[in-house]
Amino acid sequence: MKWLATSLIQLLFTLFLYAIGILAIGMALYPGLSLCFHVWSATTASSMEIRLLALGLALAGAYFVTGICLILITGLIRTLFQLKLKEGIYPLGSFEAFKWALTNSLMLLVWNIFGDFILLTPIASVFYRLMGAKLGKNVQINSKFGADLSLLEIGDETVIGGHSTVICHSVERGRLVLKKVKIGRRVTIGLNTVILPGAQIGDGAVIAAGAVLMKDAVVEPRSVFVGVPAVNARERHAHELDPKGP
Image (cartoon, rainbow, N blue to C red; front, side, top):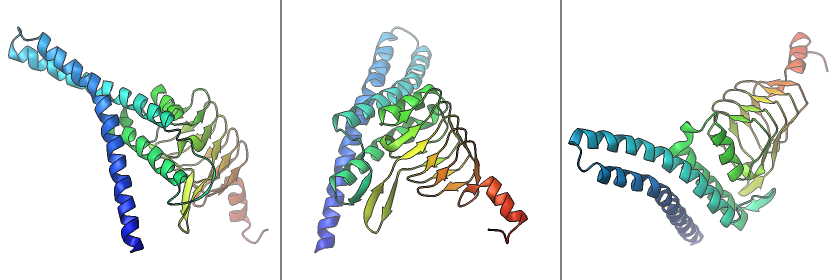
């Protein structure tokens, strides 16, 4: 009954993730709920219209307070549980796979609840750093689809375009494979691009919109990569001009 034992383990892990989610969201909600309660209590002598207006403003403020608190709390949980991922190949039932799943679950909490409001702001970079990413100065992040952030390195003044996916893991033959992604300085990652594990992108390079950079790909500095799978635009153009060439 191996399948039954596996299902039970998955159920227990899911319940554990729910418990962590309840803890993180509940703690993040507390300051905002406290604000709403105090605003409602402080306006007792006012008309109902004034009280409702004040409460509405408090609720709106509470949402943003909750989002910021959730970012800080998830970062704290990651630190307390020492959820720094390491490159390697691991069984799906291993402790490293457990850390990987927990880390990305914490990240999804923030992206799903508050992510749209931190894109292209310094708060996005703060969140990436709290989740273990190594970021340079003035990095601009416009995507919620980053994962395995403690295996990600991004250099100064790099731009991650809207809806781009950057991941540092794959699942191959029942095993979890973790590999770093290194993105240099002043790199442009275009809209809807996909960067797969092990990719290394040199300084000043451009990954064109919609491109898929395959596993372990190496992008030379100041080059432009396009297409699916992504290749050097200059080499692709030369091949189109002379398809019989080497």
